[in-house]
Amino acid sequence: MPASPLAGELSRSIFPALRLRGEPRLPGDKSISHRALLLAALAEGECLVTGAGDGRDVQATASIVAALGAQVDRIREDGLNVDYRVSSPGRDGLREPEGILDCRNSGTSLRLCAGILAGLPFLSVLDGDASLRTRPVARIIEPLRSMGAALFGRRSDSLPPLVVIGRSPLAGIDYTTRVPSAQVKSAILLAGLAAQGPTTVREAVATRDHTERMLRSRGVEVRRGASTGGGPVSWTIEGGGRLRATDERVPADPSAAAFWLVAGAIHSDAQITLRSVGVNPTRRAAIDLLLRMGARIAEAPVRPEVGAAGSEVGEPLADLTVSSSELRAIDLEPGDVAAAIDEIPILCLAATQARGRTTIRGAGELRNKESDRIAGTADGLRAMGARIHVDGDDISIEGPTPLVGAATRALDDHRLAMTFAVAGLIASGSTSIDGAESASVSYPSFYAEMERLRA
Image 1 (tube, rainbow, N blue to C red):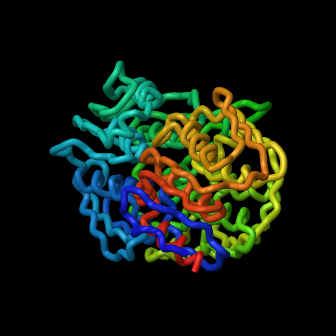
Image 2 (tube, rainbow, N blue to C red; image 1 turned 90 degrees about the vertical axis):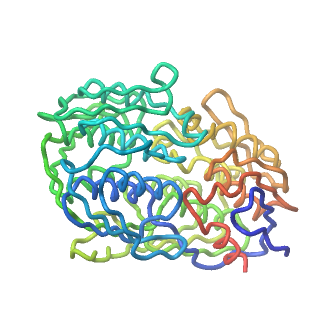
Protein backbone atom coordinates (compact mmCIF):
# COMPACT_ATOMS: atom_id res chain seq x y z
CA MET A 1 0.00 0.00 0.00
CA PRO A 2 1.48 3.44 -0.85
CA ALA A 3 2.69 5.50 2.08
CA SER A 4 1.01 8.75 2.94
CA PRO A 5 2.97 12.01 2.64
CA LEU A 6 4.96 13.25 5.59
CA ALA A 7 3.17 15.17 8.31
CA GLY A 8 3.12 18.92 7.88
CA GLU A 9 2.29 19.01 4.18
CA LEU A 10 -0.69 21.09 3.04
CA SER A 11 -2.41 18.12 1.40
CA ARG A 12 -2.29 14.43 2.24
CA SER A 13 -3.52 11.23 0.62
CA ILE A 14 -4.96 8.44 2.78
CA PHE A 15 -5.26 4.88 1.49
CA PRO A 16 -7.42 2.05 2.84
CA ALA A 17 -5.92 -0.16 5.54
CA LEU A 18 -6.07 -3.96 5.33
CA ARG A 19 -6.23 -4.11 9.12
CA LEU A 20 -5.65 -1.94 12.19
CA ARG A 21 -3.66 -3.17 15.19
CA GLY A 22 -1.75 -1.52 18.00
CA GLU A 23 -1.65 1.04 20.78
CA PRO A 24 -1.44 4.56 19.35
CA ARG A 25 0.08 7.21 21.58
CA LEU A 26 -2.38 9.87 22.61
CA PRO A 27 -1.77 13.57 23.37
CA GLY A 28 -2.43 14.86 26.85
CA ASP A 29 -5.96 16.12 27.39
CA LYS A 30 -6.12 19.51 25.67
CA SER A 31 -8.76 20.96 27.99
CA ILE A 32 -6.82 20.00 31.11
CA SER A 33 -3.48 21.12 29.64
CA HIS A 34 -4.84 24.64 29.04
CA ARG A 35 -6.31 24.89 32.53
CA ALA A 36 -3.25 23.49 34.29
CA LEU A 37 -1.04 26.16 32.72
CA LEU A 38 -3.46 29.01 33.45
CA LEU A 39 -4.06 27.96 37.06
CA ALA A 40 -0.31 27.62 37.54
CA ALA A 41 0.00 31.27 36.51
CA LEU A 42 -2.53 32.29 39.18
CA ALA A 43 -0.81 30.36 41.98
CA GLU A 44 2.30 31.77 43.62
CA GLY A 45 5.20 29.32 43.44
CA GLU A 46 6.30 26.48 41.19
CA CYS A 47 4.05 23.93 39.48
CA LEU A 48 4.88 20.95 37.30
CA VAL A 49 2.49 20.14 34.48
CA THR A 50 3.44 16.71 33.13
CA GLY A 51 2.13 15.02 30.02
CA ALA A 52 0.52 18.15 28.57
CA GLY A 53 -0.48 17.99 24.94
CA ASP A 54 2.05 19.68 22.68
CA GLY A 55 -0.34 20.80 19.95
CA ARG A 56 -0.36 24.37 18.73
CA ASP A 57 -3.36 25.31 20.87
CA VAL A 58 -1.66 24.41 24.16
CA GLN A 59 1.57 26.05 23.00
CA ALA A 60 -0.44 29.26 22.59
CA THR A 61 -1.60 29.13 26.21
CA ALA A 62 1.95 28.48 27.43
CA SER A 63 3.18 31.55 25.52
CA ILE A 64 0.40 33.71 27.01
CA VAL A 65 1.27 32.59 30.54
CA ALA A 66 4.89 33.58 29.89
CA ALA A 67 3.83 36.95 28.44
CA LEU A 68 1.95 37.71 31.66
CA GLY A 69 5.11 37.34 33.74
CA ALA A 70 5.36 33.69 34.77
CA GLN A 71 8.44 31.68 33.87
CA VAL A 72 7.47 28.73 31.67
CA ASP A 73 10.11 26.06 30.98
CA ARG A 74 9.76 23.00 28.76
CA ILE A 75 11.65 20.38 30.74
CA ARG A 76 10.78 17.30 28.65
CA GLU A 77 9.20 16.76 25.25
CA ASP A 78 8.73 13.84 22.88
CA GLY A 79 7.04 15.34 19.82
CA LEU A 80 3.55 14.67 21.18
CA ASN A 81 3.51 15.64 24.85
CA VAL A 82 5.56 17.98 26.99
CA ASP A 83 6.34 18.55 30.67
CA TYR A 84 6.27 22.17 31.85
CA ARG A 85 7.70 23.86 34.92
CA VAL A 86 5.77 27.06 35.68
CA SER A 87 7.14 29.51 38.25
CA SER A 88 4.71 32.33 38.92
CA PRO A 89 4.55 35.39 41.18
CA GLY A 90 0.85 34.61 41.61
CA ARG A 91 -2.16 36.58 40.41
CA ASP A 92 -1.12 39.82 42.13
CA GLY A 93 2.31 39.67 40.49
CA LEU A 94 1.22 39.17 36.90
CA ARG A 95 2.05 42.07 34.61
CA GLU A 96 0.56 43.87 31.66
CA PRO A 97 1.77 42.18 28.46
CA GLU A 98 3.99 44.21 26.17
CA GLY A 99 2.26 42.99 23.01
CA ILE A 100 -0.82 41.26 21.71
CA LEU A 101 -1.57 37.88 23.29
CA ASP A 102 -1.68 35.42 20.38
CA CYS A 103 -4.23 32.64 20.95
CA ARG A 104 -3.51 31.22 17.46
CA ASN A 105 -6.47 28.90 16.73
CA SER A 106 -7.48 28.28 20.34
CA GLY A 107 -10.92 29.42 21.48
CA THR A 108 -10.17 27.92 24.90
CA SER A 109 -7.12 30.16 25.28
CA LEU A 110 -9.08 33.25 24.30
CA ARG A 111 -12.13 32.68 26.49
CA LEU A 112 -10.41 31.40 29.62
CA CYS A 113 -7.73 34.08 29.43
CA ALA A 114 -10.43 36.73 29.08
CA GLY A 115 -11.87 35.55 32.40
CA ILE A 116 -8.50 35.82 34.13
CA LEU A 117 -7.60 39.15 32.53
CA ALA A 118 -10.96 40.64 33.54
CA GLY A 119 -9.74 40.59 37.15
CA LEU A 120 -6.28 42.04 36.48
CA PRO A 121 -5.96 45.86 36.52
CA PHE A 122 -4.38 46.45 33.12
CA LEU A 123 -5.12 46.38 29.39
CA SER A 124 -4.65 43.30 27.25
CA VAL A 125 -5.51 42.36 23.68
CA LEU A 126 -6.36 38.77 22.75
CA ASP A 127 -6.11 37.86 19.07
CA GLY A 128 -5.50 34.83 16.89
CA ASP A 129 -5.53 33.48 13.37
CA ALA A 130 -8.16 34.06 10.69
CA SER A 131 -10.28 31.18 11.96
CA LEU A 132 -10.27 32.41 15.56
CA ARG A 133 -11.37 35.84 14.38
CA THR A 134 -14.68 34.29 13.31
CA ARG A 135 -15.44 32.82 16.76
CA PRO A 136 -18.14 34.59 18.84
CA VAL A 137 -17.05 36.55 21.92
CA ALA A 138 -20.29 38.32 22.90
CA ARG A 139 -21.13 35.37 25.14
CA ILE A 140 -18.15 36.16 27.38
CA ILE A 141 -18.21 39.94 26.99
CA GLU A 142 -21.70 40.20 28.51
CA PRO A 143 -21.04 38.44 31.85
CA LEU A 144 -17.53 39.84 32.31
CA ARG A 145 -18.79 43.38 31.70
CA SER A 146 -21.50 42.85 34.29
CA MET A 147 -18.72 42.01 36.77
CA GLY A 148 -17.06 45.38 36.14
CA ALA A 149 -14.42 44.71 33.48
CA ALA A 150 -14.37 46.58 30.17
CA LEU A 151 -14.25 44.41 27.05
CA PHE A 152 -14.47 45.37 23.40
CA GLY A 153 -14.54 43.29 20.25
CA ARG A 154 -14.76 43.75 16.53
CA ARG A 155 -18.10 44.12 14.75
CA SER A 156 -20.13 45.52 17.62
CA ASP A 157 -18.36 43.41 20.25
CA SER A 158 -19.12 40.12 18.52
CA LEU A 159 -15.74 38.95 17.16
CA PRO A 160 -12.01 39.00 18.08
CA PRO A 161 -9.61 40.69 18.49
CA LEU A 162 -10.79 41.17 22.07
CA VAL A 163 -9.61 44.11 24.20
CA VAL A 164 -9.81 43.50 27.95
CA ILE A 165 -9.38 46.29 30.49
CA GLY A 166 -9.42 44.49 33.80
CA ARG A 167 -10.54 45.68 37.20
CA SER A 168 -9.72 44.57 40.72
CA PRO A 169 -11.83 43.67 42.51
CA LEU A 170 -14.68 42.62 40.28
CA ALA A 171 -18.26 42.18 41.44
CA GLY A 172 -19.68 38.71 41.90
CA ILE A 173 -22.68 37.82 39.70
CA ASP A 174 -25.36 35.17 39.30
CA TYR A 175 -25.40 34.31 35.60
CA THR A 176 -27.25 31.79 33.45
CA THR A 177 -25.43 30.84 30.26
CA ARG A 178 -27.48 31.04 27.05
CA VAL A 179 -25.61 28.21 25.33
CA PRO A 180 -24.06 25.26 27.22
CA SER A 181 -20.34 26.02 27.12
CA ALA A 182 -17.60 24.92 29.48
CA GLN A 183 -15.42 27.74 28.14
CA VAL A 184 -17.96 30.42 29.05
CA LYS A 185 -18.59 28.84 32.45
CA SER A 186 -14.85 28.63 33.14
CA ALA A 187 -14.24 32.22 32.07
CA ILE A 188 -16.83 33.47 34.57
CA LEU A 189 -15.57 31.26 37.41
CA LEU A 190 -11.96 32.36 36.80
CA ALA A 191 -13.08 35.98 36.87
CA GLY A 192 -14.97 35.17 40.06
CA LEU A 193 -11.66 34.46 41.80
CA ALA A 194 -10.99 38.21 41.64
CA ALA A 195 -14.52 39.25 42.67
CA GLN A 196 -16.06 40.43 45.90
CA GLY A 197 -18.69 38.02 47.12
CA PRO A 198 -19.97 34.87 45.42
CA THR A 199 -20.10 34.20 41.69
CA THR A 200 -22.64 31.67 40.42
CA VAL A 201 -22.90 30.19 36.93
CA ARG A 202 -26.03 28.30 35.92
CA GLU A 203 -26.28 26.09 32.83
CA ALA A 204 -29.14 24.07 31.40
CA VAL A 205 -26.83 21.14 30.62
CA ALA A 206 -23.88 20.32 32.85
CA THR A 207 -20.75 20.81 30.73
CA ARG A 208 -17.25 19.44 31.35
CA ASP A 209 -16.13 20.16 34.90
CA HIS A 210 -12.33 20.22 34.66
CA THR A 211 -12.10 23.82 35.90
CA GLU A 212 -14.21 23.04 38.97
CA ARG A 213 -12.19 19.91 39.83
CA MET A 214 -8.88 21.69 39.37
CA LEU A 215 -9.93 24.70 41.45
CA ARG A 216 -10.94 22.37 44.28
CA SER A 217 -7.58 20.59 44.15
CA ARG A 218 -5.92 23.99 44.56
CA GLY A 219 -7.86 24.95 47.67
CA VAL A 220 -10.82 26.85 46.18
CA GLU A 221 -14.26 25.70 47.25
CA VAL A 222 -16.65 25.18 44.32
CA ARG A 223 -20.22 24.42 45.33
CA ARG A 224 -22.53 22.59 42.92
CA GLY A 225 -26.25 23.20 43.05
CA ALA A 226 -28.13 20.11 41.92
CA SER A 227 -30.63 20.38 39.09
CA THR A 228 -34.21 20.05 40.30
CA GLY A 229 -37.30 19.58 38.19
CA GLY A 230 -35.34 19.92 34.97
CA GLY A 231 -33.90 23.28 36.04
CA PRO A 232 -30.31 24.40 35.52
CA VAL A 233 -27.31 23.09 37.42
CA SER A 234 -25.26 25.78 39.18
CA TRP A 235 -21.66 26.33 40.24
CA THR A 236 -20.67 28.87 42.91
CA ILE A 237 -17.32 30.14 44.18
CA GLU A 238 -16.44 32.83 46.70
CA GLY A 239 -14.21 35.65 45.51
CA GLY A 240 -10.83 36.46 46.93
CA GLY A 241 -9.59 32.90 47.23
CA ARG A 242 -5.93 32.09 46.76
CA LEU A 243 -4.79 29.16 44.69
CA ARG A 244 -2.04 26.95 46.03
CA ALA A 245 0.67 25.78 43.65
CA THR A 246 -0.25 22.22 42.65
CA ASP A 247 1.34 19.79 40.21
CA GLU A 248 -0.86 18.28 37.51
CA ARG A 249 -0.38 15.03 35.62
CA VAL A 250 -2.48 15.30 32.46
CA PRO A 251 -4.42 12.20 31.32
CA ALA A 252 -4.70 11.10 27.69
CA ASP A 253 -7.24 13.14 25.72
CA PRO A 254 -10.63 11.41 25.30
CA SER A 255 -11.46 13.60 22.29
CA ALA A 256 -8.33 12.34 20.52
CA ALA A 257 -9.14 8.79 21.60
CA ALA A 258 -12.54 9.06 19.90
CA PHE A 259 -10.92 9.00 16.45
CA TRP A 260 -9.29 5.63 17.12
CA LEU A 261 -12.42 4.27 18.82
CA VAL A 262 -14.41 5.00 15.68
CA ALA A 263 -11.63 3.71 13.43
CA GLY A 264 -11.59 0.40 15.30
CA ALA A 265 -15.37 0.10 15.39
CA ILE A 266 -15.98 0.74 11.67
CA HIS A 267 -13.01 -1.20 10.24
CA SER A 268 -13.64 -4.85 9.37
CA ASP A 269 -10.39 -6.11 10.92
CA ALA A 270 -9.31 -3.97 13.87
CA GLN A 271 -8.23 -4.14 17.47
CA ILE A 272 -6.87 -0.95 19.03
CA THR A 273 -5.94 -0.28 22.67
CA LEU A 274 -5.75 3.22 24.17
CA ARG A 275 -3.96 3.68 27.48
CA SER A 276 -4.86 5.89 30.45
CA VAL A 277 -7.64 7.80 28.74
CA GLY A 278 -9.51 10.40 30.80
CA VAL A 279 -13.06 9.13 31.37
CA ASN A 280 -14.44 12.04 33.37
CA PRO A 281 -18.26 11.65 33.40
CA THR A 282 -18.60 15.05 31.69
CA ARG A 283 -16.17 14.06 28.89
CA ARG A 284 -16.98 10.42 28.11
CA ALA A 285 -20.16 11.05 26.12
CA ALA A 286 -18.58 9.90 22.85
CA ILE A 287 -17.59 6.58 24.45
CA ASP A 288 -21.10 6.05 25.79
CA LEU A 289 -22.73 7.01 22.49
CA LEU A 290 -20.53 4.52 20.63
CA LEU A 291 -21.50 1.85 23.16
CA ARG A 292 -25.16 2.67 22.48
CA MET A 293 -24.43 2.16 18.79
CA GLY A 294 -23.09 -1.32 19.55
CA ALA A 295 -19.35 -0.62 19.48
CA ARG A 296 -17.26 -3.34 21.10
CA ILE A 297 -15.29 -1.26 23.60
CA ALA A 298 -13.73 -2.91 26.65
CA GLU A 299 -12.96 -0.54 29.53
CA ALA A 300 -10.48 -1.29 32.31
CA PRO A 301 -10.13 1.34 35.08
CA VAL A 302 -6.61 2.60 35.74
CA ARG A 303 -5.47 3.75 39.13
CA PRO A 304 -4.33 7.39 38.78
CA GLU A 305 -0.60 7.89 38.95
CA VAL A 306 0.85 9.89 41.81
CA GLY A 307 2.16 13.24 40.64
CA ALA A 308 5.50 14.80 41.52
CA ALA A 309 3.98 16.62 44.47
CA GLY A 310 2.41 13.42 45.80
CA SER A 311 -1.15 14.38 44.93
CA GLU A 312 -3.28 12.10 42.77
CA VAL A 313 -4.92 13.28 39.61
CA GLY A 314 -8.58 14.14 40.19
CA GLU A 315 -9.65 12.64 36.85
CA PRO A 316 -10.76 9.00 36.40
CA LEU A 317 -8.70 7.02 33.88
CA ALA A 318 -9.24 3.83 31.90
CA ASP A 319 -7.58 1.65 29.27
CA LEU A 320 -9.93 1.25 26.30
CA THR A 321 -9.80 -1.55 23.71
CA VAL A 322 -12.02 -1.34 20.63
CA SER A 323 -12.63 -4.12 18.11
CA SER A 324 -14.44 -4.34 14.78
CA SER A 325 -18.16 -3.85 15.43
CA GLU A 326 -21.58 -3.93 13.83
CA LEU A 327 -23.06 -0.51 14.56
CA ARG A 328 -26.70 0.50 14.71
CA ALA A 329 -28.24 3.94 14.31
CA ILE A 330 -29.23 6.01 17.35
CA ASP A 331 -30.82 9.41 18.00
CA LEU A 332 -28.76 12.20 19.58
CA GLU A 333 -30.69 14.88 21.40
CA PRO A 334 -29.34 18.41 22.11
CA GLY A 335 -28.05 17.27 25.51
CA ASP A 336 -26.03 14.49 23.84
CA VAL A 337 -24.62 16.99 21.36
CA ALA A 338 -23.58 19.40 24.11
CA ALA A 339 -21.84 16.58 26.00
CA ALA A 340 -19.99 15.32 22.90
CA ILE A 341 -19.62 18.60 21.02
CA ASP A 342 -16.00 18.05 19.94
CA GLU A 343 -16.62 14.47 18.83
CA ILE A 344 -19.71 15.02 16.65
CA PRO A 345 -17.76 15.02 13.32
CA ILE A 346 -16.17 11.63 14.00
CA LEU A 347 -19.49 10.29 15.34
CA CYS A 348 -21.05 11.34 12.03
CA LEU A 349 -18.51 9.09 10.32
CA ALA A 350 -19.49 6.24 12.65
CA ALA A 351 -23.13 6.83 11.69
CA THR A 352 -22.34 6.30 8.00
CA GLN A 353 -21.46 2.69 8.90
CA ALA A 354 -24.39 2.10 11.28
CA ARG A 355 -27.54 0.24 10.30
CA GLY A 356 -30.50 2.62 10.02
CA ARG A 357 -30.94 6.37 10.30
CA THR A 358 -28.94 8.32 12.88
CA THR A 359 -30.37 11.70 13.81
CA ILE A 360 -28.46 14.50 15.52
CA ARG A 361 -30.62 17.36 16.78
CA GLY A 362 -29.65 20.81 17.99
CA ALA A 363 -26.06 20.87 16.74
CA GLY A 364 -25.95 24.62 16.00
CA GLU A 365 -22.97 25.22 18.30
CA LEU A 366 -20.87 23.25 15.79
CA ARG A 367 -21.11 26.22 13.45
CA ASN A 368 -19.11 28.32 15.95
CA LYS A 369 -16.05 26.08 16.16
CA GLU A 370 -12.81 26.32 14.16
CA SER A 371 -15.03 26.00 11.11
CA ASP A 372 -18.71 25.46 10.40
CA ARG A 373 -18.40 21.82 11.38
CA ILE A 374 -21.93 20.94 10.29
CA ALA A 375 -21.31 22.07 6.72
CA GLY A 376 -17.70 20.87 6.62
CA THR A 377 -18.48 17.39 7.93
CA ALA A 378 -21.48 17.00 5.64
CA ASP A 379 -19.61 18.18 2.55
CA GLY A 380 -16.62 15.92 3.15
CA LEU A 381 -18.55 12.76 3.98
CA ARG A 382 -21.07 13.39 1.20
CA ALA A 383 -18.18 13.61 -1.29
CA MET A 384 -17.13 10.14 -0.09
CA GLY A 385 -20.59 8.72 -0.77
CA ALA A 386 -22.28 9.16 2.61
CA ARG A 387 -26.02 9.74 2.70
CA ILE A 388 -26.12 12.73 4.98
CA HIS A 389 -28.79 15.44 5.15
CA VAL A 390 -28.66 18.76 6.99
CA ASP A 391 -31.80 20.63 7.99
CA GLY A 392 -30.87 23.79 9.87
CA ASP A 393 -29.02 22.60 12.98
CA ASP A 394 -30.16 18.97 12.63
CA ILE A 395 -28.30 16.19 10.83
CA SER A 396 -29.57 12.81 9.62
CA ILE A 397 -27.36 10.03 8.28
CA GLU A 398 -28.43 6.79 6.58
CA GLY A 399 -26.24 3.72 6.85
CA PRO A 400 -24.41 1.58 6.35
CA THR A 401 -22.91 3.11 3.20
CA PRO A 402 -19.68 2.03 1.46
CA LEU A 403 -17.34 5.01 1.28
CA VAL A 404 -15.19 5.87 -1.72
CA GLY A 405 -12.02 7.90 -1.80
CA ALA A 406 -12.58 11.54 -2.70
CA ALA A 407 -11.13 15.03 -2.38
CA THR A 408 -12.01 16.57 0.99
CA ARG A 409 -11.28 19.91 2.67
CA ALA A 410 -10.35 20.25 6.34
CA LEU A 411 -11.14 24.00 6.38
CA ASP A 412 -8.19 24.54 8.78
CA ASP A 413 -10.08 22.46 11.34
CA HIS A 414 -8.13 19.71 13.11
CA ARG A 415 -11.21 17.60 13.86
CA LEU A 416 -12.35 17.61 10.24
CA ALA A 417 -8.85 16.65 9.05
CA MET A 418 -8.73 13.65 11.38
CA THR A 419 -12.32 12.63 10.61
CA PHE A 420 -11.64 12.44 6.87
CA ALA A 421 -8.36 10.62 7.50
CA VAL A 422 -10.15 7.91 9.51
CA ALA A 423 -12.79 7.71 6.77
CA GLY A 424 -9.99 7.13 4.27
CA LEU A 425 -8.94 3.99 6.14
CA ILE A 426 -12.16 2.20 5.10
CA ALA A 427 -12.87 3.97 1.79
CA SER A 428 -12.03 2.40 -1.55
CA GLY A 429 -9.27 4.21 -3.41
CA SER A 430 -7.42 7.32 -2.31
CA THR A 431 -8.81 10.06 -0.10
CA SER A 432 -7.11 13.44 -0.28
CA ILE A 433 -7.34 15.99 2.54
CA ASP A 434 -6.67 19.63 1.74
CA GLY A 435 -5.38 21.27 4.94
CA ALA A 436 -4.41 17.98 6.54
CA GLU A 437 -1.68 19.68 8.58
CA SER A 438 -4.33 21.28 10.80
CA ALA A 439 -4.40 18.02 12.79
CA SER A 440 -1.26 19.27 14.58
CA VAL A 441 -3.39 21.84 16.41
CA SER A 442 -4.31 19.10 18.87
CA TYR A 443 -2.53 15.91 17.76
CA PRO A 444 0.96 16.49 16.30
CA SER A 445 1.71 12.79 15.67
CA PHE A 446 -1.74 11.77 14.41
CA TYR A 447 -0.64 10.62 10.96
CA ALA A 448 2.43 8.83 12.32
CA GLU A 449 0.20 6.92 14.74
CA MET A 450 -2.13 6.05 11.86
CA GLU A 451 0.73 4.58 9.86
CA ARG A 452 1.81 2.51 12.88
CA LEU A 453 -1.71 1.10 13.23
CA ARG A 454 -1.97 0.10 9.58
CA ALA A 455 1.44 -1.59 9.72
